[in-house]
Image 1 (cartoon, rainbow, N blue to C red):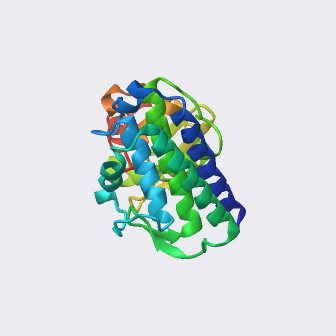
Image 2 (cartoon, rainbow, N blue to C red; image 1 turned 120 degrees about the vertical axis):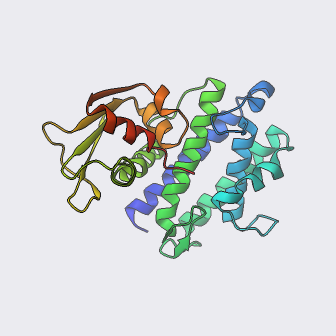
Amino acid sequence: MSDEWRANIDALEQTAQSMIVLGGELDAADWARPTECPGWSVRDQYAHILGIERWLLGEASDGEPRTVANTALDVEAFRSWPPDKVVGELRGVIERRVASLRSGAVDLAQVVTTPFGRDMPYGDFMAHRAFDVWMHEQDVRRATGRPGNLDGPAAEVSARILGGLLPLVVGRRARPEPGQSVVVETPGRCWCVEMGADRRGRLAEEPREPTVRLRMGWETFFRLGGGRVDPAEAEVQITGDGDLAGRVLAGMAVTP
């Protein structure tokens, strides 16, 4: 097992266990609170994670593959379960999942088609599972006023995924002119995307004077990446080309 794949599994376990502990702290009113995922309550967030992880273990009873288009399957299936049953089931599922991943029972090198439609080695897919669980954990924390777990393994994996998608955001969506550059900064992190002559965005060294610089908090960054906040309402400091900045911000949502 490569160090990167091991780290992906660690990140998945860390955020899932954090979500389980959080679930034990919530009261009845918390479970019913709406979250930034349209139409989903706190209870629905837990149902979604439980269902996906059960399906990946081969324990889903409906036999339907999970895709972006049918994520509501598990939300509907577990929506009526009492919260303590959902949390208890999730605890057991995560224990079995992590044990399976670490024991070698899962071939991490096998290329699989992911629920979001991309083919990749299973070990790489685990980074996206950590990212998904962590984003939903943060949805629950914001909805219930219990901030936490903004740093650590799952947060680092999430930063790597979102930062790695910035060339797509800038190159395909914002479409600056060749030679123009966009710098996105959060505390402790910085990404620069430069537009090539072939009109493709690429991560690059930060220039002395980028075309536009966007400074924002870490939470603002991943909420934009997850489509959790309207770009017009996000707290972002813009230096440089305001029109290009607006196009970048408008295209930052990269999760389904």
